[in-house]
Length: 208
Image 1 (cartoon, rainbow, N blue to C red):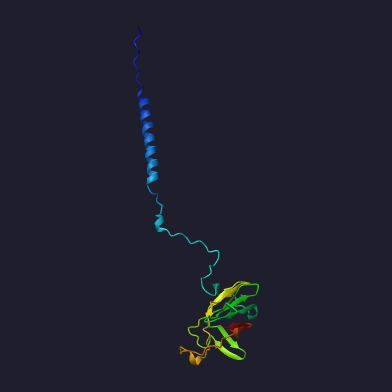
Image 2 (cartoon, rainbow, N blue to C red):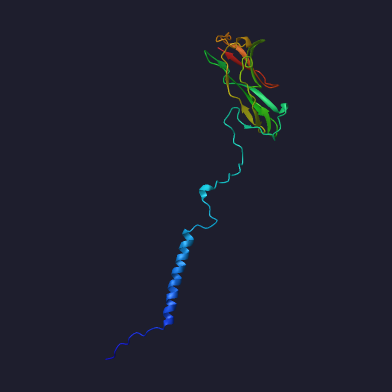
């Protein structure tokens, strides 16, 4: 019966090569781990960096009446001949204690955007009956302001409605709590509006 051979011992150089391979592999693993967890010299904490604002592609309209963007210095003033204003009422006849709501529309009829002052300092609402001047918004106006706005080509702005309390106005009666009421019972009245030097056509309405 044959005797199994005992394993032959390897030369020392083989064992050295094996140890080098093992240690080399460990070194590579350690280096990779350090590169992952150790911050690089040029890294910055994102909490300290503010994002750059994106360039705006358009101006948002302010939530005001009249609508439209505030004018900037590059927008030319509207030529008076290109601005059309119109008297606006919320109804054609009013009964009982209903108060007419007065406003005006402002239209840029030109082919380009332009700026116009639409503030209360240049707005005026006039109510007449025949040749009788009944009421004027300028008689007792206070805190009037200017408001220059850009109106796009063909765009129409509308002012905030102003309630008429169905009384006569007079600068001498502004502080009075009781003024002379306008005649009702089917009486005919006319509203005209002005914006600076611009004047509208009159609009007829009835007080019942």
